[in-house]
Image (cartoon, rainbow, N blue to C red; front, side, top):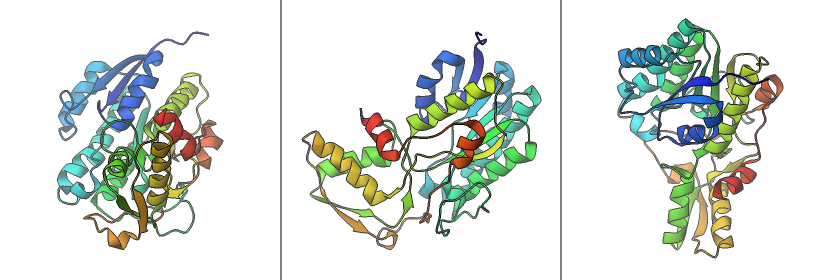
Length: 291
């Protein structure tokens, strides 16, 4: 049976996840992609005006204040974009009776747990960015309605500023590189997030949704930033490109304004169980991204 095309509002235009969503959701209907020129997330009234003007069947909030260190010095802006705006999207979605999909982060946890975090674990952020993202989750949950909050980690793509692009450049420029080896997580390609988002939308559209709420969505497997850099280096060497010698270091040797969780591993089994959506291994996704 042919489904009617959906009218989908996507906040954020040039971010890593938004760019991949625009590619992968194109066949589902009409995409209304709102970049900063049309949507200032620090202006609540502007958000309401745009949502009401478009009247979407689905809202995807793919915009965020993601500069983790910068957030420490501009908490008001981080909370406006990461906490207040998601709450407004949730209220507008509930008023329209349509679902909201929102992306959150491993930074809602402090990283002290020895095993992967589940959705039942109590959040405990270490800094402004994590606290602002947690406040956004709480604002959406307080509204209720149909919503998916998808926590992800270590996002990279071939666009924007991220670890993959930085490493590709530095590995070819420098003779040796020191990379943090005691933070563990799952590097997650923005394309994986977009593919999973499409699968979730299709299940909802086909009348077979799982339970609404908070879910973890990362690539399978785990590594350190050092291990991720090693894998990026292997791909460069396979292409005959120069590659720096890598040296593992502890987080204490690379201080940053914001503290990072040492354990960013998220257990994604609930998403598979409830929505029948699973993710590829991080190495497999990296290969696909680079291809």
